[in-house]
Image: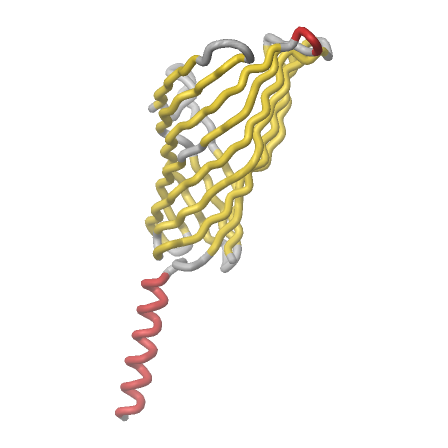
Length: 204
C-alpha cells in the first residue's frame, strides 16, 4: 500500500512538473517568405521578403527569437527601372503566451526590426543612390494553434508601431523622419484589418 501511494505521489509530481515546464526549452523556427507583384500609378512594383526566424521558450509561456534576412522591391515603368530598394533586416522579438483552451493560445509580441539598406532612383549613369537606416518598435497580438508536437499555425496583426528612418543621399545631407502608427486598420472608411499575417511554426 505504501509503495502504491509513493508511485501515485511521484506520478502526480512528474505530471505537475511537466505542466509547469510547458514549452520551456523548446526551440522553434518560422519566418516570412513572400513575393508580390502589383500595378500602381507609377508602374509595376515587385516586392520580395526572405526573413527566417529562430527562437526558444525561456519559460513555459515566454519565447524570444530573432529574424535575419532580406527585403527588396523594384518599380518599373514600361520595362525601365525607376526605383530599386535593398535592405538587410534583423528583427529581435519577444512573445508572451496565454492558453485559451487545449492547443489554442493567445500571444502578445513586441519586436524591434532594424533595416539597413539603400534605394536607387533612376537607372544607369543618371541614377541616384540613397542609403537608409530604419528602426522601429512593433506591438502585435495573435493566435497560435498547436497542431502536434512539432507544428503550430499562427495568425497575427500589428496594432502599434513607432520608429524613425534616416536617409542620406550620396554626397548630400542626411534627413530623419519619425513615425507613430496606432491604427490597426487600413483606413477609417473600410475598417478592414491591415497587415494580417498567417504562417506556420516548427517546434524542435
